[in-house]
Structure formats: structure tokens, C-alpha cells
Image 1 (tube, rainbow, N blue to C red):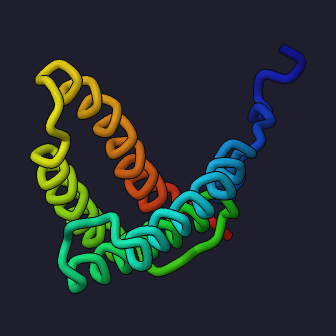
Image 2: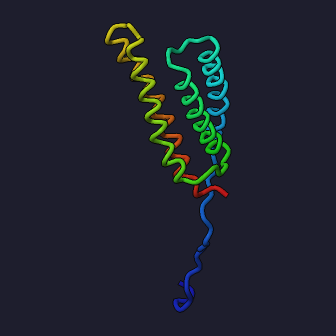
Image 3: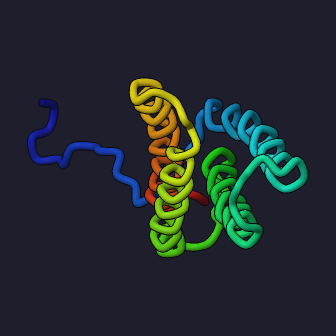
Length: 143
């Protein structure tokens, strides 16, 4: 202690911390976008899906919005408000749940193979839900 009557020096700032996305989010974005484009193309033009056209268009819009959220997370862009993403998350959950349960009946495999496929697909679905959840949480830290 040099001067016990002097206040200690501290680095206090009023700045809000900024979110800096990792390279992994950018790589994931550039991997998933071509895969989704191919899946949507094959769904509409090759007619692999058994869903009606109105559901395919709705699903296309839902996943388009998902990729907007992934873009915003990967490149630290503010798109809409956090309340929009809180409203969107249940829509994404409903869409994924409907498509998963409709696909389960189409597997026509043994119970063990169905369970393995469902566990793999659910882990990917939970990850997409996490992306939207994380984006709406870190949205306040963007410039």
C-alpha cells in the first residue's frame, strides 16, 4: 500500500460486451446451405417427399428463416428482435416434430434401426433448436 487514502485504480467501463462468432458457425453455415438447397430441390422436383405441396412450401419458409438465424449467428448480424426469434422457435419445433413423426412410419425397418435413426435425427434437430435459441440470446451483444 502506497497511499491508503487514495482509491484503487480499476478499469470500469460502461461498454456492453460484443459477440464475436467462431469460425465453426461460419463453416457450419457454408456446409448446411448447399445441403438444404439440394434437399429442397429434390423434395420439390424429384418428388421424394410424400407431403402435400402446401406443407412443403411451409417447411421451405420455416427453414429459410432458420438459415437467416444461422447467418446472423455466424456473421454477427442483427436480424429482427429477440422476441421474433422467441416466437419462431416453437414454430420450428412443431415443424420438426411433425416431419419426424411422419417419417417414422415410412422407415419400415426393425425397431432397433428406427430407434438408432431417431436418436441421430433428434440430436441434429436439437442442435438446430439450440442455434435459434443461442441466436436470440446473443442478439443483444451485436453492434
